Image (tube, rainbow, N blue to C red):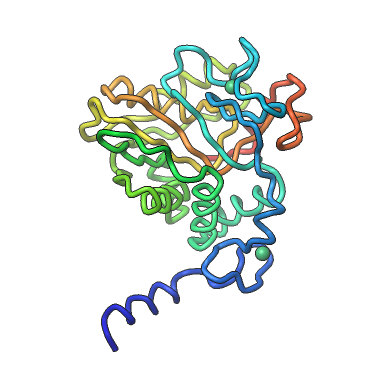
Amino acid sequence: MPVATLFARLVDALLPPRCALCGLASGRRAVCAGCSADLPWLAWPCVRCGLPLGPGQSRCAPGGCELPPGSPVTRLRAPLAYDFPVDRLVLRAKFGRSLPVCQALGELLVEGLGPPAAAGGTPPLVVPIPLHWQRQRTRGFNQAGEIARVVARATGWPLRPDVLRRPRPTREQSGLTAQARRRNLRRAFSVAGVVEGRAILLVDDVITTGATVEGAAAALAAAGAGAIEAWAVARTCRRGSAPGHGADGVTGQDAGAARSA
Ligand SMILES: [Zn+2]
Ligand SMILES: [Zn+2]
């Protein structure tokens, strides 16, 4: 058997042939077209923080954006709401230690954000948000790392999981003010390797308050990184705002409890 065929068969054997949601045959897709169409895709996102807005809107009202002015993150993007069944997929990826489900999440991220705008110059480094090493050892893998692998493959941008480290476990975040949370998270990350002047694409599974990616971005910015964008598969949204149907102006900071990493 030719090596190429053998390789293709190996790839086929490794790729999930069935939809991660309904279990039916899905061709080469990790989630079948029917299930994908029913997912809570976010429409009319803010170009800065990614929150869903009303029809035709592209920016949060002044003072209402979840990325505060001066944030080290220039843009947050997430194509899906962290609602059923995306939440179940994320939990299966994380606690079921399922690599095919991680692959499915990565594919949904890439599908949802569409092809990246052609940017001249050096491509950004694709950097997953790391877990603390103890947590990674218990879990066996980092789901953000697996999702970032799919992103790097789809974009052709270099994957650099070694750039960010999390040498200290993050202290219990509940009960802390937003400011204390940010300080706590900034101290949690350290940068290894040269990032000076390089654009960075941070990848995570879920964004809740954005404090984790902002902590990571602050560490990267301090090490001299260029523009830092963050992509996640899903995000929690303001309470009362159905995907794509506008926000009611109530912020959902306490939704952070949904994320355990
Ligand atoms: Zn399906
Ligand atoms: Zn915004």
